[in-house]
Length: 388
Image (cartoon, rainbow, N blue to C red; front, top):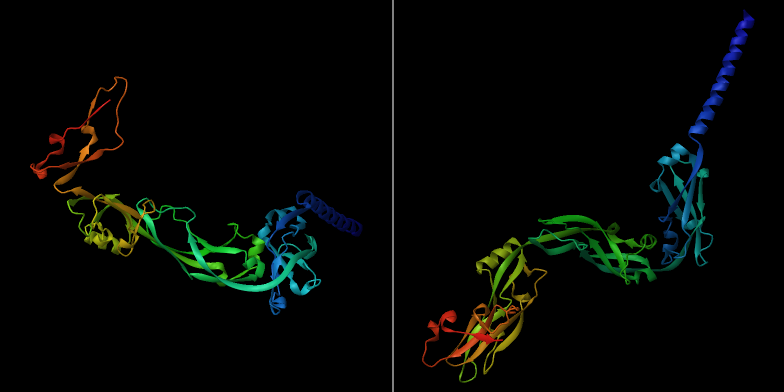
């Protein structure tokens, strides 16, 4: 009986050992050890104060070899790891020497899911240049990335808070900066909105700074600003009114006043458009802007509307700010009439051709000592023809 019991215990131990071996074999077959590689560009510098006291800052060498991280682990673990799980640092206090150019600083990469001895970094060092530190202030330029609000709206104002920002970095990199942009997307919006935006730095070649260059800068407010976009309603068909001062030459009189264009489109805030409506939606050009004193021929002048608009009203983006004003100067007793070109009789037109006029109407000037020109009917009393 005792012998049988001993044999059973031996068999149980042997079975356990076989089970463990089989389990290990299955684990290694189904979940083998493997490697996975990543290329990283974001290496955090530690202990920058180590060189900051000497008025220096670091900038990554443009010829830095791409940093490749290789991880060794079981396949199921590797499948779950992304580059975001890696943290790469370079401690300036561990630099081989601060007197060399470039300065070589050891790179350490850690991952919460992997033991340090299973992480390999190539190359082992980050190549840096030490430069004098510089600080400059830049205006924040708010852009819309060519996006537009709804068709019935225009951008009234784009503001940034703060409006300007300090950037500290290696002197050569600071001198490379052309502008600081805060970009927002409009995409058919119809209401004012506020948004937190991360700044982008543009160099003098109009290209965004690389990740390594951005990492070499210290940007105020962590490169964040608050952008506010005010959207203004568009109003079309706003009329232009013009006058004049002075008296034309003896024997002449002032005739019609024409503006090109005669109507414009504007965009404005609620208050601005209410002010415009109170003026009957008319933009008035001051009479003193056009002087016809002593003139014997038409007076034409280009006027800018930019400073004539009410507060919080602007021209739409597809409108010219200039308007041409023409004051007709006619002999005394004369009148100018607009005659529609469709009323012009065309004589001897070839049967295989058609006639079109490039303008809808022409100007006709008439002088009369006897007939009251006020009673003249243009289409009935005036006849016009061309002979082809």
